[in-house]
Image (tube, rainbow, N blue to C red):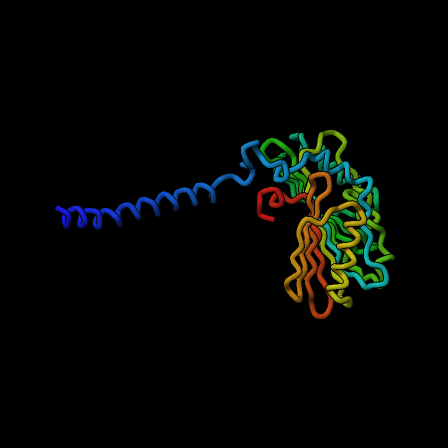
Length: 264
């Protein structure tokens, strides 16, 4: 009997071990697949909740982003995306179309997809600045995507006006007044082709912190790339500076959805 019991116990051990391992794996999968905003026992973590558009736009009064003085700057691009609580694509398009034309842009192309989407391109013949405007209805709201590109080369950053959430390259592009803003994101890119990337990162890192943005994360382990995250009143900004042929490429992103999904 002793040998039989020992033999049975020996045969049961692999099965019990398998059950333990499966249980551990199931627990791991459950934790890994839980929503990023599940939080602890007190409910969702407020740090991963995307702030309201009103909270983002409230930063505009104090947001005056200046370029690095004394250094060459080129390849300036700005992409702003705004979601409005309206279904009227034409009214929103007309607003931006009127503003662009009033500040010296000529409409050079337009495509209309019934009443769901309008795309147009504009050019300022004096400055060479291009604008691509796309207005479309999505899920019952109107999305605006405006890309602005400046082909000019500036010998010094202090020759360029500081920009804000709604003003760029001296172009005041006010929001559509006929509806509430539901969301806003933007992405800003430019190059310092003749400046050391570390110096460029240090300058803009200090500038953001001087503007009231708290640095929450920094990744400077690479010799040719620097990334940092910042937060102010629940709104997130990411700064990325990458070395390129002895110069630096700069990207600044504000309020992107991924910042609030535990991916950043």
